Image (cartoon, rainbow, N blue to C red; front, side, top):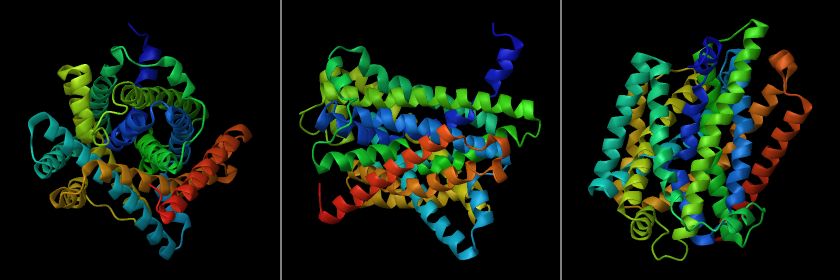
Length: 407
């Protein structure tokens, strides 16, 4: 049995696990399966690099909330003139909408795989269940919501790593996939999608609020240092879980789906997994996808509320917001747009939105006037700016490829 101090320390964990759900959402599934099925182990390095970036970024976001007692959108809202603030809110809301689109579509695909439901009905059910999850947060508080989301994260983890217990992964090739490289413009586009699916801009905004709302602004230096230490563990552990899930998806796809006809869609990948690894693994995959959609769409809606409250200074009840943001996903499903294509494109769009959240985060957490003694030191600041530079360069390449019509 854990000692009382250890139990108290463990009790400080949780906010980062809510944020980590966004790192294993249905957009990740589409991007990772496509990467493994098309290119084998080539892009494993993208996930390792992205996960390392995510650890730094999410810690900075949580630290900002704990030290200042304000969320990143609130600090932006305080410093931007009204016109810039509204424009900034507009792009952030588009990012949140792209996130929500991926998550509802992913859940709808899962219900179609499990029960044969039409995608439109599946999307509606995912939206309704997410309303229940958000009601838990609205009425029960953040801690019960954390427990529910962490439970869903556990289901996601089991669902997506089940395939690794089967033989077939070429570990020497997988290790070779840690060497950074591309093979043509299509791999650059896919890497941008994987990056957008891994480093999620909406949870960069959200994590500052999650940490602040759970722990409040702590003025006692000793207590604050303890909270920051617990936050480092929280972020590290949660993103180890998320990173393992993402890498497992690529490895399974590379080992069992490469060159198999039809694996450019989640439905085709599910069918191939069933044929290659058996219906039990395929069932675990579909259940994991459903849990991913349910958890991440709730977290995405929560993030949108935090963004609006901070930048526009208006608060819409979460349940009302959920009802409105569900509509675009249902329209796309009703129109019959290829769901896997929509998922991947949403992740590319998210990648473009990362700098708008990341650059202000680095600037604010590096200011001693705002952060005091907890401002980023040189090694952390250097790493953060290096990550930001990589993201900007990759996004410029992505935009160039899109303009040139690369596929």
